[in-house]
Length: 361
Ligand SMILES: NC(=O)c1ccc[n+]([C@@H]2O[C@H](COP(=O)([O-])OP(=O)(O)OC[C@H]3O[C@@H](n4cnc5c(N)ncnc54)[C@H](O)[C@@H]3O)[C@@H](O)[C@H]2O)c1
Ligand SMILES: [Zn+2]
Ligand SMILES: [Zn+2]
Image 1 (cartoon, rainbow, N blue to C red):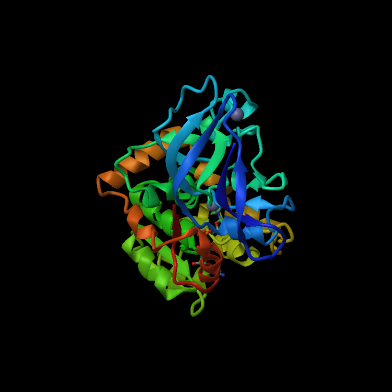
Image 2: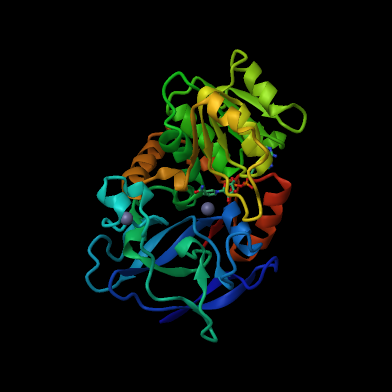
């Protein structure tokens, strides 16, 4: 066991604090990773606001790159010294999704069996089974995906959650194809990545929608061909106008609120695809929607957990694209901050101005 610093959310809505965290030595199947960089994702804020569940105290952080420090007995997929991006989809290989050949839906993903604790022994719940706003964290070895050690940790760590979720919402869940039109509602880290994913997949019309002009400017750098300030314009009408009056082939909701989901629903062309990648809170309800519109407009209404990614397949491929200059992961890193600055980063997330704050350890 060793003691490290970690960012802990103790109770609903309470500001986070830095606590001493006990990290157990890895047992079979586990690994301890020295974290190098960890992005601040909106899901961390959801956790600290009690929007995910009530299993306080949480050890926050889940979008990280680091170096494997030690592994438990029998672990041969990674070794001490390997540079890895942590993932929250360590697939089991035996559940009904895995055995039918769709492991990105795995229903029984692995996490470390042991728990990290506070100094007094209180068990911590690591965010998304990771908990990487900490000098070191204990994970399942399958949560470590080896990547090119030459890549910048602050940039590639973002593949561990938000950027992968956005890229995958377009490339995997939305199955965007060459020549299609795509609209993305909400262009924070996740939505901006969906814009980049749509562009990578060959979409020729990529419409970024946000309330924050700065986000729209960044989205343009990442591949948006058009922008819509939905504080000033009705996004449904604007998306239709930009797509010949029809609506986009794929509309991605990267906010996850009833009103944005409804906008996405109606901003699709007939037979178009809606992808929900933003995470709603438990009290939110599907807005009133005539069932005949669901039937009559056709197409697909999909959810995208983690961009339907398979980390072992997607992380190394995306790091290659980054290293080749074809995916600008650096553009997502707005600021590098310290472990003490996570609460301030949540504040910035609320008031705009940041695509990703990345904690450097
Ligand atoms: N599905 C997944 O696997 C997955 C993974 C990571 C994050 N998420 C979720 O994705 C969402 C976005 O995360 P993020 O880190 O990019 O958050 P963020 O706070 O960085 O970005 C949210 C963006 O939405 C914009 N916005 C808010 N309300 C809007 C509205 N009504 N219309 C248009 N734009 C609006 C904000 O201005 C901001 O730019 C969160 O709900 C997060 O929990 C999902
Ligand atoms: Zn499985
Ligand atoms: Zn996340």
